[in-house]
Length: 410
Image (cartoon, rainbow, N blue to C red; front, side, top):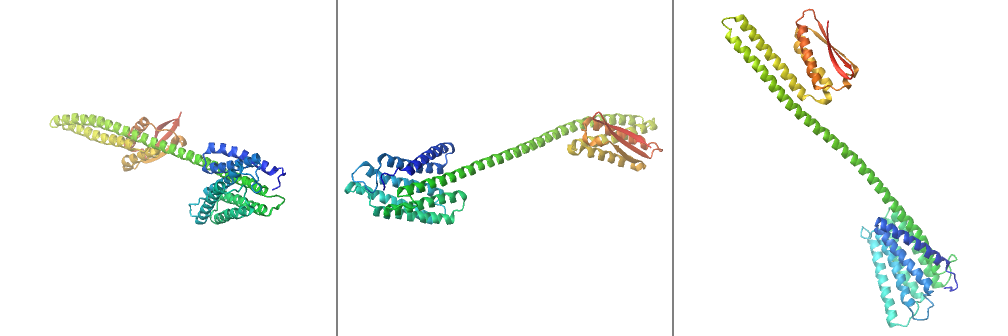
């Protein structure tokens, strides 16, 4: 390697990798993403190795003295490569239907461990102080073999955009590593760059691709969070609507129970009062049956009328208790028509309606229904008693937001 080279590329890559290390460390603290942690670990190994090279100015192939730099140089390289593969293997999910990737990754790990043991052996039992270029060629080509096998195998089975960008970065890294190996072995520049300058150029391009991939993945995660929050909001709105609907159902059920209780009370009052009246007239009819048959007949007619009245009133009470609130306007008109069938039709008196358009928009209160039905029944009975009446008109108007019923006859 040319020792008077200014190492501009190494300084540039050191600055870029340090900035990216700080950024991804902060990003990991925010997101707790495993991929970001592993990538930050690789960036740390790269920064440490670059600082080591600039601090010691150690030459891997020309060193002549036994030193700390000789001991640390190769382990730092192996740790950097191990960190890189650890990150990529995690992204490629080697345990998920990927035997080729798994073979390549474990082959790489095994080779890295073996090279580390060989380096320890050299430190402890030999007088070597530098690495030969032939040894560098053989060992690094072995690691690159596993790298290319794993990356090309992953390219066939992993289709997502994020993983494809990571694979592209890995191929760029491996390609520049290959150029570095041949430049170091032949001691010749390639593309105007020599030895480790090629490798660190590949590291820089790889950092750009990996950072792009992780940024893309963060975007997808954030978008997924936004979509999830949107779905949760929609579900919350649906739940609110369901709760409101359930509340309305319970409220209607409660109103229905109250109506049934009111109906029971009204039935008891009506039946009690009518039975008392019938009982009184029955006693009177029995007492005057022999002395005044005409008066007795009048009492019996009153009993019959009371019976008919109680039947009508009970029918109205039950109808109001069972009437559906949503259909109350139509139900009211239907109830009137039923009266006309019982009272008017046998006497051939026609029935017609004059209904204001606002009728279906106002609320029909219980008191209005009771009084209106009572008025209408009374008017129908009076109409059939007059032979000159052939038609009855029920006029429903709205005044000041309140319904009013009028009766017309012709």
